[in-house]
Length: 444
Image (cartoon, rainbow, N blue to C red; front, top):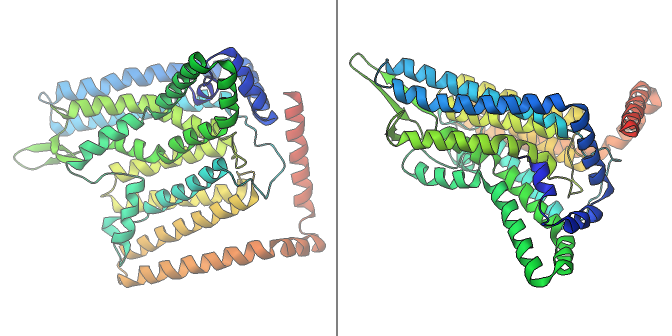
């Protein structure tokens, strides 16, 4: 079940489908047509995606069966290796499944003229709030307990926005909440369908059709907000149910769950956590990754779907290193630094958003996050604990001023370069790229 299909399935009858299609903008209709065309011309991608989904389900069974069966028959360390390899193969199969099925819906309504202004409405405000929360989540990964500096212990609390639990008994409560939220896109769509069915039976089709026309954008914006802002918390918490550490000494070995050290891995109460995490990841990870691009047509703030897809996978990497490599501080900080660099580079080079000032805002935010990671590296290197804090404050203020001045005087700077002839070739290349895109859309 993909998010694109969820979008189209909200109305209960065919008349409501027609109504929603008429109320949608022409770009959304073009997007649906392109998706259908891709589905006709590339059926093998969908077949391959389904094959890897089936493979992921088979491997998921092995992830549970093998470690729990062998826990008392082989060395615990060997059992742990089997578990980690099987879980890695499981995630790889899910990613390939997502990659191939996603290729069927990669064309969206972002191919529009660049916009500078947006309407101040509920939908756009929701998108902007999601962008701010995304920054807080990504930036929070820069602060690690093994690279502390003055003030970082307070800033580290923001990580609960991305990884919403601390090791201990509280993990069990948060886990089951996140497990339910893993099904929130499906629950949301089914709930809306039931409400529409109830309204049709009691108030008639005309009333329901009017309701859809009035609240359709708000319904989709809530669904986008659920998928986008809860993506990291749900993924990271499900990873927490699989995060086992094996400790060995001369006498014995123990395997405990890092998220709750009172739970012994591969037996008893851990087995339900293993099973539920795998089910949630199968149901949530591909659908939520895909839905982040599919549910954005209702807003003026749209992003290139391929970039949205890449960002979603980078968020999964952040969640994985946080859960599975927190104590490997050099690897952890290196991964966070690399992800932040990629976030910033993609946003600057590809300019994924339709609205120019949103691209500028996100570039500024990713720069602040990158500066925070550099400060953690400096703290890990043995600098005085106050030095990274001073550098963090100075760098954030400096970057804010720099971006403000750059974007304020960018038109003047561009005009100067144009007059000197430096931008002539660049403009010609952009015009050629634009013409080729228009030709491709005309063919579709």
